[in-house]
Length: 157
Image (cartoon, rainbow, N blue to C red; front, side, top):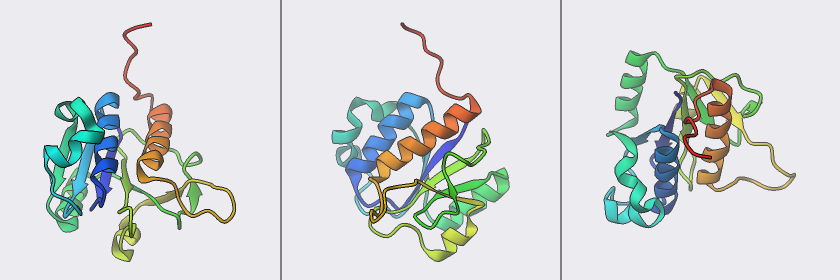
């Protein structure tokens, strides 16, 4: 199943929203530190609500620590970027992809951008820059889960 990767997030409400989404979709979230806020339940609780206990959060203390883990696992890194080379709907996703979103204020540094195996973008109306990071995460993760057949099984009608 694809995992979500948050690179040094700045806004706790967005992070809480993405953790809630990941819990509901049974997706792991990797958070590369440092975050721009204290990583506490209190900072995330408002957006994450009572879903935080169900979220599978894996913390990596640095980009280098994350990269060492990723290399050992042999997983592909797919970066969401306004400088992406392919629309997110045109990439063929794999079940073990790592879907990375950058900081709300600055994206990712050039070294992280260069390390990505694929860079996707969300096509938007001319003259507009970007969507909220949690909305971007939902769109890209939804497409990856659809393509890989990894949405949770519906148990109720």
